[in-house]
Length: 460
Length: 160
Image 1 (cartoon, rainbow over the protein chains, first blue to last red):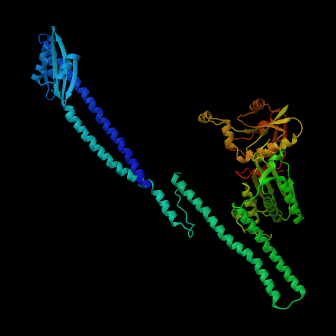
Image 2 (image 1 turned 120 degrees about the vertical axis):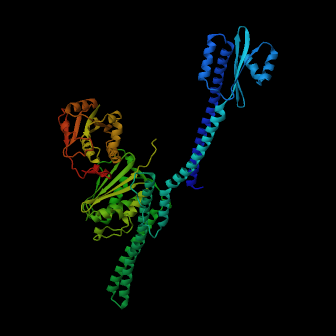
Image 3 (image 1 turned 45 degrees about the horizontal axis):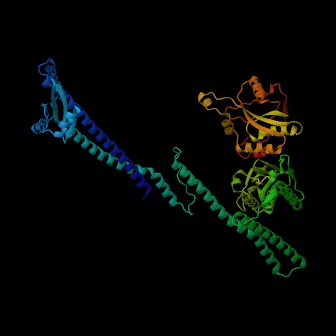
């Protein structure tokens, strides 16, 4: 069953139940009340009848008669019986004579006053003592109210209920349909979007912040991310093939030229040297690609151990010192925690070295060996490494793309590189459940901030 | 024995540099109890005052980065610091400030020389009031770079 019809059904059933309870309640209580009310009226009449029939010679009787005639309306089929009871046989005789139920007369005699009904005919009787004689006064009448008013009420209630049911059905169908209108629209729109036209977005109505607009916004966010992912994928392939083909083209070209005619040994050596250089470059690219691929997936098991971040930084510094003698890396350990346990993280030494070496290398390279400061500190649950350079920086518009493999900022063509280092570093930090954030200002410098959770070492 | 120092703050990471310098100055001697003070005028509306809670207000003002920077300093000076507490100051004049320092048992005050406080809504610069205090006041000079940004400001604690 569709949610729409489900909602309609639930709404309808709820309303129907409420209306039924309401209607039946009204009918039941009114019915009950009409009985009580009518009995009271009959009783009053019985008392008055007794008074003016049995105390005829007093002044009171006259007054009662006037009241009765002036103020009491005549009830339907109203009859009054007054008879004396002196022996047991008279009860059944009276019952036969006046066509009154015997059990009723008996209970009047027993209890003093009783009310009863036989179908639509209602009885009220009282026992009356006068001058040592026992009288029974019985008034019978038909309950006009029950027979007529209640029937009218019942008809009205049934009619009303039927009408309400109709209205409820209409309203529940109408509302359930229109509540789901926006969702249906979204579904229709999303169906149109495929990989071919992923640039399409849902229309965001800037009405109030309801669930639907939230849903739309979420969908659009998702689409944005998907689009970037697609774009990155596409760019990656074109960039990778370009990067790989450049050294290959030079190798082929160099070899081709060398083979056109016979050359001197020096020429061959030069050609071979060029080829070697390009092949090395190719090797480097493929190696870093392999690393990138390896760190990009979580599937492969990487061995994690407890390592000290300050040790890793020193190791990376000595590594870079070997490669690049002109580097100017300064380690600032002013905020090093007093407790060395706070520097220990769970990680893979080689991978962390690779990540930090990449970032530090970038920092040195893009700042023409100006000072690069590395800060190390730790908060309660994270080790924080900040690497600050005074390099060329990254243009604001391009910061979004710096983690794309092979992306190189527009101001970096003077520097050698393939654009794999940063994505690789980020992948590695992610593997360690850390965060890598980067802020940069063109011609002022770049700050890389790395946060890695501290290893939880049990204290004994 | 311990010494209680007061450092005004604006809940920006950069403002913690004052605390950092103060701690570096107090490497020797008594251990420290630090009171970070944020000056803010009290709300005028009675409804706000009814539900006034300093903890809630402080939690609303401080960022995760601030917490983190503070914990870096705590870890750095683990053996020096006994306790760091954040307090709101709602006074208008130096009398109120004297009460505040008395109540918190402040022994010394450290203030930045050049730092411009980044003031939110009802916050105000407590410098003029602090300077009238009779307690020993130390002005600390440090290079102030950048503005108090929403995010990514953690590295500001490393300046100098």
